[in-house]
Image (cartoon, rainbow, N blue to C red; front, side, top):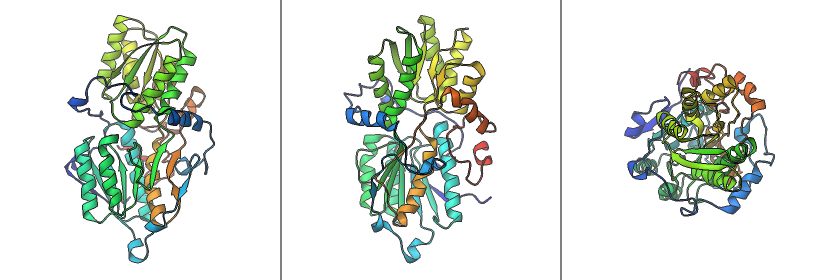
Length: 399
């Protein structure tokens, strides 16, 4: 099988490895962040909109959720349509924040397989990729290199952080090439389309509401977060705070973990040594199993927990009959940006804000998703949406 024609740009990309690792948090960002209100992370209107969008039926084929859209408003892209020789296998450039956690690894594999399919169809030629390894300065440099090259028919960006990457995204927009932002947002609307699942508020609310429903009043809940400064993560926590504040649960604190399993286990162990932990809320669940191991080591009953759709957690949930939910930040979104690029370069309308469906996995769906992904490795994400792509299942198994 021919691999996608991908040219990696920058030193960080040369060391890119498709294995699970933790998100690196710069030393100067460690520790507790100011509240969402102080950072202007919370927006009441957006919060209410996202919670309402959970109940809206998306437009499009449910068998292709990566092409569905919730309440889309379409924009004319005819100005970006390529003609003649320019339309023959155009170069598409992708600036990636990182592949520093299992969710991003799974998505990156899916994106590569989607690119391969589009290359076979002649919709995309060279696929140039830079990986910033979660370094804002590196990603700013990567985007500048794409702009300076003048070779990119379209530029896809998954930002490392929100505010810091905004000027770089705006500069990419000024280059004249259509810009597609996905996954994490920036503080500009200059891009042609911003692609994302419903969002962090919906994710955080799904998890917090489940804990409120399943736990008795007065139960003690520990919140585990990855890092500050990323909009989707800040929104998850902002939503959870408001739901917990209106509940009778006791929030015993929130800790930044850098997504590191050993750190997660250590934090939970310390909390268990000082008192009961009845529930765990996480803003990303790839370290959920490490947290559960702390309960196992001390012979304590499992907590009610909100993890994520990573298979290691789903399998632990099933095996031990844990009371749990798996909120989802739809991993299949990694297909959408390259499909959007081809649509834009063909002059087709796309949603200005492309909101994808985002449905958590609940207990009654657990067995189904584990059966569908029975041959996948533990660090794979159940809702990756790549079953119809070339390389399935081997590309995701051989990570």
